[in-house]
Amino acid sequence: MKSSEDIKRYFQQATLSTNPDRHEAVFKKIRCAQDQSKATAPASSRPHYRSKIMKSPITRLAAAAVILVALMLAGTFWEKTMPSAAAQVLTEAAQALSNLRSVYIKAQIRTIAHDNFELIGLDYDFVPNEMWKEFDGTPQGKWRIEKPGRVVVMDGASSLLLIRPNHAAKGGIHTGFIGWLKPLLDVDKVLDSEIRLAQEQGSELLLTHKESLDGKDKLLVSVEALAQGDFTNDWLKNKSIPASDNRRIYTFDAETKLLETLEVYVHTDEEDVLVLQLTDIQYNLDIDPALFALDLPEDVIWYGQPRELADNEKYEQMGPRETARAFFEACADENWDEFLKFWSASAVDQRIKDYLGGLEIIRIGEPFRSGRYPGWFVPYEIRFRNGHTKQMNLAVRNDNPAKRYVVDGGI
Image 1 (tube, one colour):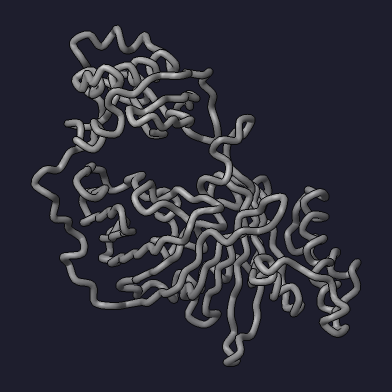
Image 2: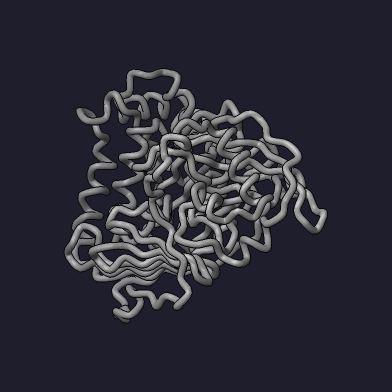
């Protein structure tokens, strides 16, 4: 094992970075790996770590001292001095994946079955997510992502979302329906995507090698990323992977450059929590074309962009708090025509009427922003007709052609 100063000097030369603080941050990780590699004492005398931490492959990797190369990719020097190791891996990956026809991915994600695909929660149960993609030579290909409560398909020309049982929305080829899962679905570009994000967001990316139990060489890519957005109010913190301080650990076959596993851990003050894990990934399967189409129910209700109203100017003048109050007043009065002026759907489902009809407004608070959400969150407390109360933050946004605030979530 080289001395600490030798490794530090090598690391600085390899990255060509001019930022000593970032050198030191990653060097600490290397030094930690060295220290752990010397831990040959009996298990009873070694430090104790929480089980969730010890399940992390990067921890086991450090304990085995198999780090061969550490590359931290920072934006200002990237274009001219891209480390040769990363460049070589990208080139080899592009060549190896050039004939990829299809991929099937199954993952477990801490989320809610019917809610947004990007949503996570540290105390949520794991929900199965399945993904199919057919690489047909076009930039977008054809794909499908599904979990028990919702499914999105892209047929090569447009996307379609179904929120079971009967709400749907249409989108384009660059839909935002699936959020962070879209780069994962582009498995042929996932390494390229992570390196680009390292450049743009200043995250740390470590390339390492290890030998598996069957003697095969594996390439591990570990990404340490900070939450993206303004969390002066932390309402959105840890509610998606981009909005969390997280570690993403990819394992590729070193020869084929095919992705084999992925684990995503969210860092908290107490522990690292596993929020996403690939449980199966298969390549070049024959995919039934029917998977890229959806049969919609006869009573489908469509979500879409708000249309301009005859009295649209009245609603344009409403701020986030006024919008929240008007929305809940419409619910209280069971005025569903008025309700639809704040709701991006073609009709009001009976379940929504039963849920929100006749409620009582207890409190409407001051709006705030959080993360990278383009709208506002309005605190509220309401009492339902059955006597139960609820406190939550209503999401409203006005980045639509009608230029008025509409409800986007939080009920």
